[in-house]
Length: 338
Image 1 (cartoon, helix red, strand yellow):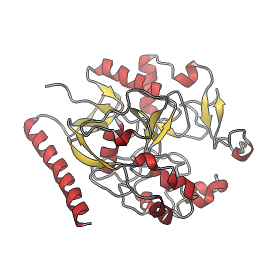
Image 2 (spheres, one colour):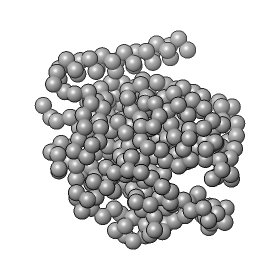
Image 3 (spheres, one colour):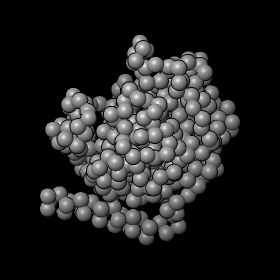
Image 4 (tube, helix red, strand yellow):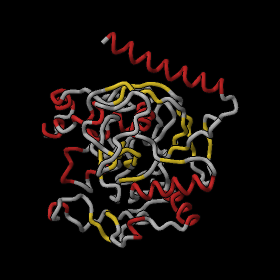
């Protein structure tokens, strides 16, 4: 335990020193900026952290007794926990991309989102839909052309996270912003995402190890959702976060580095292909994920996510053309070359 504490403190000191050195070497660089769409970005310093988790299934079963044991046995892709070095600072969106910001992108670029362009639509919430009676047992109705980023089946304001966007839609937004502003935008790598989510922590969540602590920092599957999803009532947190569906971005407390909604509200696409054995062969410096694959990684959980799957280390994956009423975007803005 003493060695683990020392290692953790060393990593935190390393990140802090990286930030100080960067500020000294780049005196004019702002720690926070805002772009032409009103998207706010916070500077993430270079540094090191421990990525992934070595928690054993029996330990997780005791912490999450309501889950079948097979669910915790399926989390082996989070191991081994391994050292990662982020060698370059970068700006990360302080908030998830909002409906209003995505609308500005659509109107400014003329881009047609994939669920609209291919005519098959997306997924959405429908009070008359019964997941138990559906062919695939899916929690949401779809695909259906009536659902898109404009309509996930429940009311959203312009300040809510955009949903029903594919990986390709996220990449298109990043490409358009890059061309418009003359600076590179992109999705974060899986390593960059977890580095920013943890913000110096090694606990299950940025708020600690207790799942109920999520209620202070995340819009997650809780007592407010129970009435809408009685089938999964045993997996709701006992407390209330006041939102049964999405919340306006930034409604909860930020993590230690100033990022909001890294847990919950919307799953966030990252750039990596997925491989369940990647951590065993990942490089230390700036891992980019496998060279190819079939599915892309998404991180962080959503308003509908059970607490086991909202942990900082949890890895989720899905087809890049998937469009779901739980999945959104957070972008990186790279620093200009010097």
